[in-house]
Image 1 (cartoon, one colour):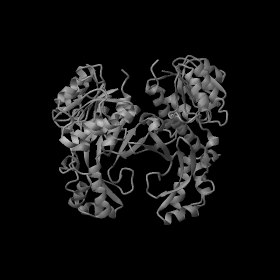
Image 2 (cartoon, one colour):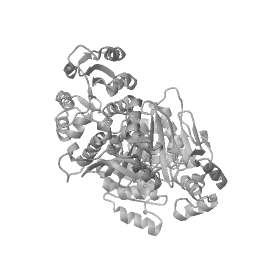
Image 3 (cartoon, helix red, strand yellow):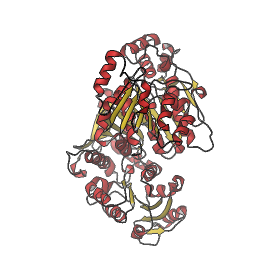
Image 4 (cartoon, each protein chain N blue to C red):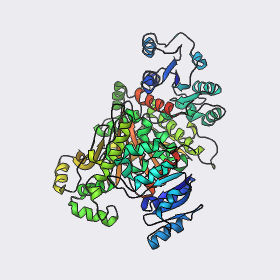
Length: 320
Length: 320
């Protein structure tokens, strides 16, 4: 398929670089300041240009939306509330009967019903595996089990917060110290609030909750971040982890999504329990009826990891 | 879809009982001594008859293969070598352009090429999720990642052996004692050799290896049980587990499948490591290129669990 890649951060770059390996062709890349379009695009050259000049091209970014593509890969930064400009990018693709594969959580978490409505009025399909738990096929597994048969999904969905907590637990260090370490390692951003306050995990849970809801006739409408009960790890003292350890327990930032609600917060867990993954790992626990509890764990974030989720989604689209 | 259920053991019973919940209709059930066919079959009555009389019906079992079904669910006991009669059941369905969903490992492990050839000559499709790791969508996840992108699959694939080892490790008991306990709990069969000698795990690994192979042009032919290097747990003394524990390790029966080979045997693992699942749990570890390592764990066996895998497969078939 021909991919138009909107967004040239870690995910967009990796999608553009790996697309050929998956048998797809990149016909354009755009970032916030420019775009380069063309058949048989020299992806390395375009990304190199971005590294050197800060932009992927001279054309206006929006020109990408008018190009001849099969799939719009929307990988611009997640924005809340109206989820713009990501939401409008998706709508533009649907209006032209193109497929939309999102890595951007904003439209899926904040405007799910509007997004599905745009899809319904289009010949294009919507997919968003890459918005939840990176390389772990969480959305697809829930779809495959059957969302109506999934009661709850819970897990560790933010690698930054999990790294910080598992380092605090392992070393007895204070939060500020470990956060600085995480930032040095590139595991936490300069402004880490999205991760450590639980917002990122909450968006992912809202997305899963919306998938569970739409399979249930008795539930109307979709959830958004505003509906989630969220607390983060930024006020957790090292003493709390020490207290937990004395009792054979540890603390992790756990998100939980059910059709009715979303909750994110630090939780006490058995020290070596399934949910107590370490480092930047993610784990998704799917509670089904007859199949019992299913655990999926692996790398939750990263350019190549998230790109593999995007490219898996491209592969799941109905053929043209 | 209309299901013909061949086999009325734990899996066949559960498939017949749960089919309605998944929106499917059972139009016949057969066991080794009889069959009952009919639209709007009273599944409970038929299974009750089996419980009371030892057979599901008065008709000859093979009459099921001539019935009007969309999907043959083959859930007769796994047999090795020529994999009969399961293999012939599958071929009979393919010859009538019907779909085949297998819970029976025999044909998939021992005669993979022949089975795929029968499928290729048919309008029907072959699926076999239920042959590997029960409720864990192992086969489907490998297919979804792309078998050519999966380098290795390893894991704990036999709940009986894992229960015995994890109980030996936890309680310091000898093998015979724990095996007797497992038999009392219904976790091990009266003749447990298939499980404790590693044969069951090896068959599952051979199946996965065949899925990986057929995606690679440079590899000819399929593997069978004879190609696997297999050792079991039946000669492991409790002292070996004690020795391992002194070093923070434990032992589990681990199967490993790559395109080139299959190995099953007891392996030393970190005590609290990911692969060291406890009880009858299974875990499947998928090594991919860009997505890294993916862990899938959950219930590996049981009537409802395996039935949910069968019914998931039915849902994955192309619509008629």
